[in-house]
Image (cartoon, rainbow, N blue to C red):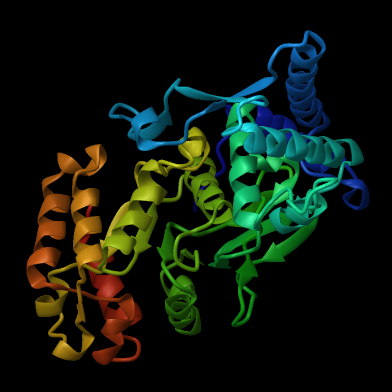
Length: 395
């Protein structure tokens, strides 16, 4: 049985204490201390802008750049880290004025949320900040994607997290297995979730989700809900004493954060069953090392010890699959595969170089669902059990 380990992060400890001490009906996201600290950072940003304006100088906001050039791989810690490079946004620069004003506008929206002790979806924040600028037909945002990008800029600019800004994304991801969780005060037995499973929330901080009784020995993360449904229906998690999760493709922050906590706090190994294509490889990379765009969050989401179970380029021959499962690689696939092979965290790993090169030589990619051509439960009854027993995975 996995045992909980005491968190060494004071913020997490404070959040957990706040969650257990506050009546559920009155509970908000995060501890009061975290809320006050985040609010102070936003107010400091506003004061800095106001100070420049009152001094009749050009107001500005410095935003760390979320690019590959400002991201490095820490070989010791085995995760991505953001560098010190920043981009200054000035109000009086015509090329930057729009983003500057958007940054100030959304910062005010986050301030209002924190003061009200309420949460809001990313979509809701977009609409709350959406209006036409007086005297013009120009809107504050063209679409939600533009708003979401600015919110990520605010996160890094004031060194906080989206959850601390009381923002959440659309739920994507499901979990079932031998664990009980407490979600906002409600005890949920993930062993009794029927065919639907437990919907993994966007905010998985200890103030919202705590872990109860857990007998599971590991976590199997699969790429899509279609594969997850096969594992759930076959009661794989019950037979093999594990937790089963899925992230609907590229896992959102909530899923990655939950996987991180299951690994760090409960000591559960994380195994990934993903498609044999550049996108499956990239999903594994993000789970294991973190993402380039969100490198500032790697320390709370990356799982360096995560293992890639499959499927693999050699499985076409190994499993005796038919030509029907082949999906031809296009030029974009090949280019993406070569980019991934050159990632610093993959370039020195012979197994990964061999895996990617063999896929390119094959000229085709495969989905996990291709194993169904062998038997409807081949993936749950043969493929994964054999790989787990042989410890046949790629690190």
